[in-house]
Length: 193
Image 1 (tube, rainbow, N blue to C red):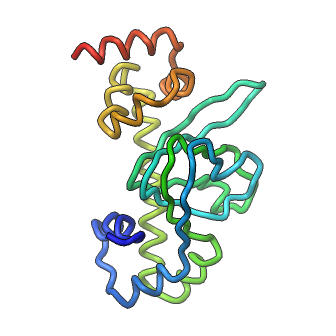
Image 2: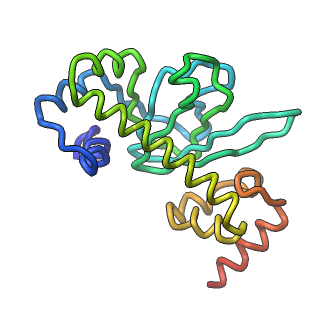
């Protein structure tokens, strides 16, 4: 599978894009190898890309009063961006950090908007990426309001158990909204099952 195979498979679940249209779309994309700890988007920076994770994982976080708050994780085969900044062209309120070495497909803002005007498929692709961001956000909010910390941890483990086990207690506990000691207990219990 070539460097754009995974993103095509992801979008093909929703809409079939003819080969000539696909070639036109990917002509404006970039592929980048990234390392653990790399920052894709920094706090205060205007977001210029939607990223598709061919490999790796990210965390979205912000800092308030000197304390980091992890608000989301993304894993292989998903779109990630500081979406509010991407659409408003205002500085990002979150940073996006790579949690593992990987590869991202970068969809530039300018290219995407030019493609919207060129092709009916452009509008569909943009809408699908926006819908993906909305669904992820809604699932996260519902999870925080309706699931226990144990259930949220189990849900995260289903997405990518290998990477979840490598994420620091500090980042995971912030994401789950619990104290690190409680997460350590949950991890021990989860390991026994």
